[in-house]
Length: 85
Image 1 (cartoon, rainbow, N blue to C red):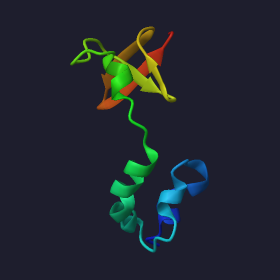
Image 2: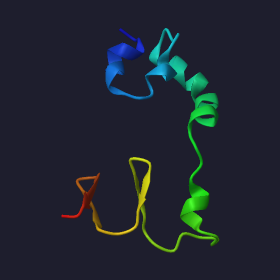
Image 3: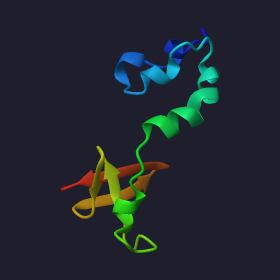
Image 4: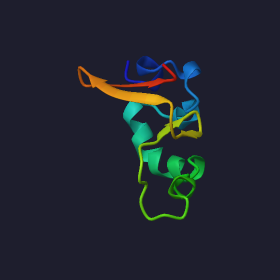
């Protein structure tokens, strides 16, 4: 009842290997730092484009940087991003 598969459908996430060999769902937290270092690729340098700060709003989606053609709103404490309408 406290296993990761009790909380998540592990077949529907690309991070399912993060939960391998964990008895309790919170055991995953112990592995998170190492997992991030080994699996998340840095992308800040491509956002900065040689500048110190990002001087506009960008959306990161599906491993791509979207610079225009989107609207951002927050309704009932929920972030909503609409692209091209």
